Length: 231
Picture 1 (cartoon, helix red, strand yellow):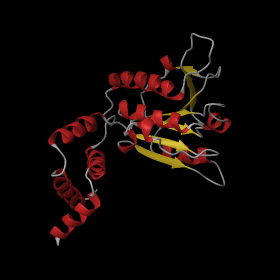
Picture 2 (cartoon, one colour):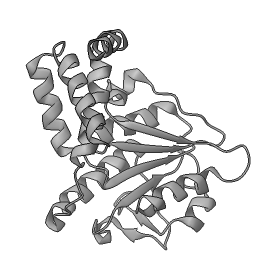
Picture 3 (cartoon, helix red, strand yellow):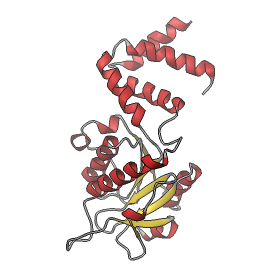
Picture 4 (cartoon, one colour):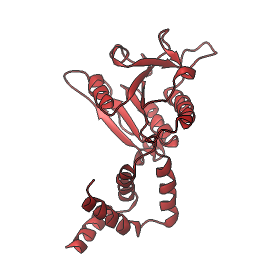
């Protein structure tokens, strides 16, 4: 982001900030300080929209900013009754290809950003969550409720991981599994003290502006008024 753009954004932030309470702004700053893109979540062809929406809520609760959704047969729409507003605060990235592989499209994007990709699966070839260390950027892939992750994911991910089960059933609900994995990984990430674990100042500025625009009523109109003051 250029210096001119940063100045412009700060001016717009200050202007929109007049319409946001100090308490709300302080909450945003507290949340921004803990936001991360070091760990991200991928949802593959989720059958039940409320399950995917519950994962969005889980990601927001654990400070995970990005959720990637691979669409094949099933398209995803946010369920506001399940997310409880979480979709307002996280970034949702969708991948769909009529021809070719949506999985490949998603994975190429993630690898360009430096992620190691792990599919969640009870397979004998998967490692335990206890053995998965967040010593590099990680993307966790969760499959749909009926079949789990696809063969396409299994053959193209960097590894498989599972949560050890003590009962008769093989898996948790997707949002529960995401909660367990994210809690464990974020706790373990602390010991590595990654310098890029939290958002950069530039990323925070971009996200701050996005959030200000989302909470200020008629922010587009206010922005037009602000731009006129610059002329």
